Length: 233
Image (cartoon, rainbow, N blue to C red; front, side, top):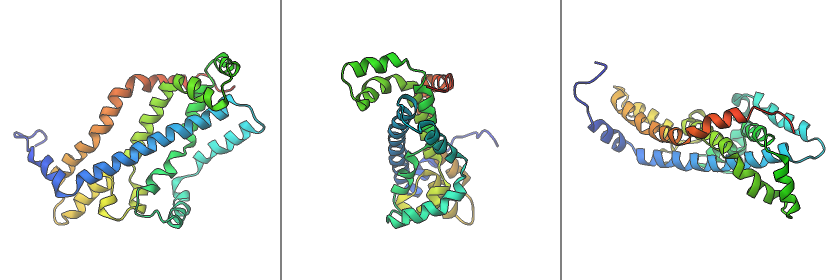
């Protein structure tokens, strides 16, 4: 029956307690929070450099950096794993955080938004004696809230739902994230797949995404639209 006659609220309690789902949830929160903060900082800083500063080879460097988007993850997976292993980060949360905070797509989004801002704002800051970083931090960055919100939502969704890379680098139960935890429910009961528990646990995993989108939707469309208005500086 698609719509149950009686709601089984105990499925939510059992799904939360059968496995350390609170630990999975905490790991996902830590990873997603760190990835979002790191991505917003690195992408906005790189976007400011490529969009507002002038230096030799700027456009060529940006094109090369952007072209890395064409490299599929399957090609980068093994070299990235070897690199994480050399750092001693396997089966920790670091491989889920550090590689994810450098994204060409985020840099492209922030650059496209920043080139639409009036140059007079930057000139006024320079006249007042602001350094390049102070202009970026105090003048440019506050004006990029729509793009930052858009990038933050996309980054949060990607990090929160990531499955393949955590599956490769995480083995211990205490370091698993929510997507791996959902699979652990299925493997915990080999004889019968507890779909009711999996769906209850999936409900927990959807709530943070839904909340983030509800509170950030007013910036979401605005950031996408304004980031594609102007293409050069």
